[in-house]
Amino acid sequence: MAGFYGKKAFQAFFERLFFIALRGMNYGNGSDYEKSGEKYIFGLINRIFSDKEIVIFDIGANIGGYSRALIQNIKTPFRIYAFEPTTFCVNELEKIDHINFIYHQLGFSNNPGTAEIHYDYDGSVWASIENSGYERIKKQLSRTETIKLETIDRFLEEHSISHIDFLKIDVEGHELKAFQGAKDAIEHGRITMIQFEFGLASLYAGNRLTDFFSILQNYDIYRILQDGLQKMTYHESFEIYLTTNYLAVDKKANFKIS
Image (spheres, rainbow, N blue to C red):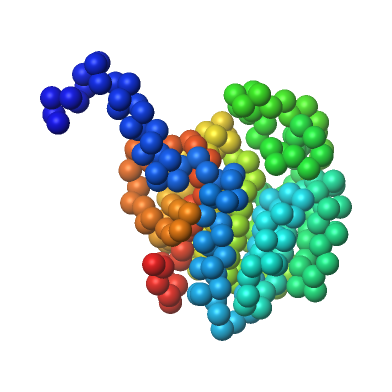
């Protein structure tokens, strides 16, 4: 095989093979509910937390699609806290009628305060504080709204929440700053599992996958597949900016991920 490597005549073949491999590793499916592996995660939550009431954070809840899926699929008792900063989306969250569903109109960052969020239409999944690089996918985030920001650490303290069992975050490139605002919770093992997205928005926000491995050094990190998980050891070749979901699991958790 060495005779084929680095030769111009075979580049079209290797490029095609490269993109086939990416699809095979489930890169680029993070926005597709049927292929992202989120269904598998619901089953994992049910298996791991079958004997307790769990606390779930849905950060970047948008109009509530993911929260509704949690309500429909999670069998163990739960309390869901949904967070969404835009007014239109919060009005949609208000329509979710479940005794253990609570929503808050705010976003999370590394410091409390306010910020401008940008989006192209009410309820858009592209709503972003970062607002950079969206022309790459022909999106014009021309509408803005001033939103409230909080840190996860402060929210936990103010609401007397001692532990989060499962945290899902999808905030269009602002994930790393949200984790920086959860420094205490992350370092002291107060969040058991974290599902986060890494992709094009991360690139234009200036984030690298190595940044997530660094801030989540007390966690094992897995790439979420359609029917399972692939444990990752960081390598520069995994800096792939195709929207993909990852799962971080506290290394001290008293269960095994298969």
